[in-house]
Length: 555
Image (cartoon, rainbow, N blue to C red):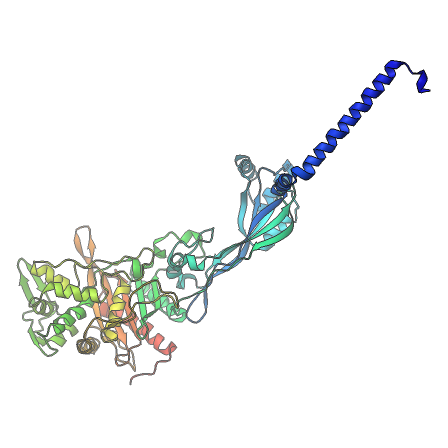
């Protein structure tokens, strides 16, 4: 039948067949190119759109006290996120999402529109797992969940100022959390996952790197003693109508800090309280003039000079000492008293007469050897205070000798008394077990042992019934220490109506275990002396610590 077709029909049929052959050849060539020559490229492009590398979060290191009691832990939380470039929700779905997240629908819509150029956007963070499950149960396209961790502080206000806190990214922002952030921070793992075109995870493909939790940090702190200390300080704020109160306690045998707390404190689990003055670790951030608590070190300098002995007589009559246009006064006219009694009665006149026979540079050098005016630990916000330069004016020299014109912090002062308790041996203070951030030699002798022993005898007299620190007495134990009462510096110089009360000491005397400093800031003016306000708190907290540590009575 084909023989009857016109010639033009053969021509058209041939053209169609040729076109089909050419099309098949081109298609085969393209397939060959894609399957053979461009296979790697296409494979990479496909994976780029369906395979993602994601983090595998894990725990931040835990912080505990010396007994292993948790003070900072990480709890699992979940965050809801989306890829705005791929997200496509209708009005009804957006309303459901806003209700589930407890967000305003208008604000949520604006947030998605304003971030539509991004490939990652948090919608809500820090949700308990049970809440995120309810949101994911809605099965809204493009809604993703991510595991994260939130820091929780079981120690609450008892350890808040020392521990510090982390931000929403779980990075340390204050305290131990900041100081040891590198050690505490975890190393996230990595894994490849398969996603659909909406960004929903379909399956895990492989783990590229396993996660590593942060190191655990064990503090030298004893939560039991810390809690007793805070309760005593809080009661003092009420009883004495004080502005603030601070206590630092050191284990003399190893220089470990057992308690470091100020009142009022704050709740670290409440974000609103973190940026208040109560969050400051006043034991390190606040500098004060030490007042009479510096006098033992002035006396140590006098004994070290060889010019004075414990029984050297000093004439303090008539209880007043004119120095140029200034007047140095005692509370009473003590007459002729021994060097030991000069310290026991805290005689400014006696101290001044002794120190005028010696060079000031040597005294300031001794203060420095005891760590006063020096950095303790490099703690965030730490204020190391200031030791002055030697003065050519005798009155200024005298004020330095009894604790004015120089500044220290409470931890430095407690460390200095721990050195006296150790009979002149200095060991660097420790906050943390097995993590040393300092290069200070383990032990240094900063005061001759005989001089130190004489100082212990002098300080023991301060807490006798006739001394200014008698209220620091603990039944069954001997205590050595010194009271201090200083005026607060105001806009017009020293304010006669504002004071700071101090007591610093150590217990027991023969085999010392604890050295502690108590500071009460601006108690009511009807009762503000260190012996009356700070010393009883020392007795209460140190007495309780002796029981907790099962220290046998000396008597």
